[in-house]
Image (cartoon, rainbow, N blue to C red; front, side, top):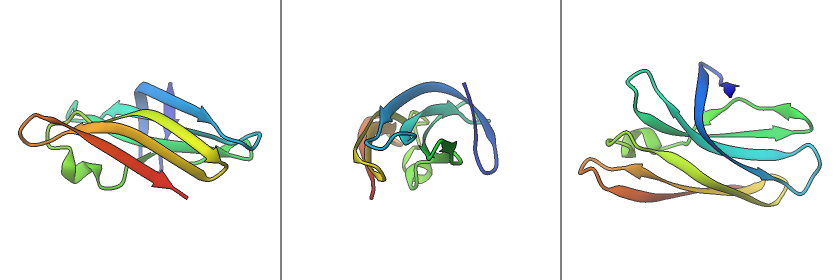
Length: 103
């Protein structure tokens, strides 16, 4: 699957999807490999039948020193109110939990 972002076109390696309460609203997240072949976490959403630009999860670039970031689960309680969970690899090679919210 290809997802067009604001500055890049990424090939998605892993995708977790949640259908939101409103028809035509979907939230998704997953991982893609960057140009250095490191896994990076991303999120993307569809509103009113239109997909918005995919974006790297804010703040993960600095945390993901191990290059193993991923969004594993996405859940939306109401349209526009979503949470995503996953992990990233720290500089010691350990996986750390990652939770993000959009309200």
